[in-house]
Length: 295
Image (cartoon, one colour):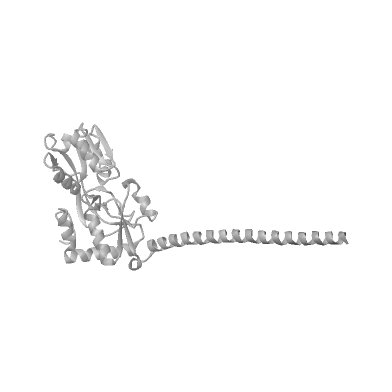
């Protein structure tokens, strides 16, 4: 009798252990399932946000909500940081007006000028809009109509005794990397550049002007609009040489084939030229003599 009771007790204990073990396994399985579900939800949320961003980038012009402009933050008066730490400039003001009229939010994205093509091709920006020269790049981008007639010139100190190209022989000349002035000095004006003692390249023109002021270089090859702005802000002591290095036009550069967005932005820009807003913004930055729209 005792033996039967012992066997019965062992059987009950075994069943109880099995039940508890089964419950524990189910709880563990449930926790794993919940964890996996939470992970899937988070992953799906991230993918959804990324898809939404990509969809906005690829959306037709009339359906987009943002417009991201790539610009050089050291290129006044077209794009720069003001004394309050805000990005501003002629091109950014034009872009803001375009966005206001289309119901878009303007995203101002400063870029290293050397990496502007990567930023555009990767979708980080919608266009390059910052004193961007069309000449020689006609087949590399989808372009808006030109809106500025620009020249490449040399800035020197007023007392430097440099008045002509011949006077640049044996001198140290500065220029911005990947700029139109550099392109001219490496192509059509290569013979002129060959007479320089040295051609120093700068990441931005502000640094170039500081070296010109310090006497580290003798001349600076630069866009005339930028030269006018820099000289006006720095006071007397500089002059623009009469001989021009090159002439060019500025346009808005879109990714090759992005015709729909280009056409919408261009349409709005032409409307601004027609109603006078374009010229109003040009006058704000002293560029009314350089623009070729709204005249």
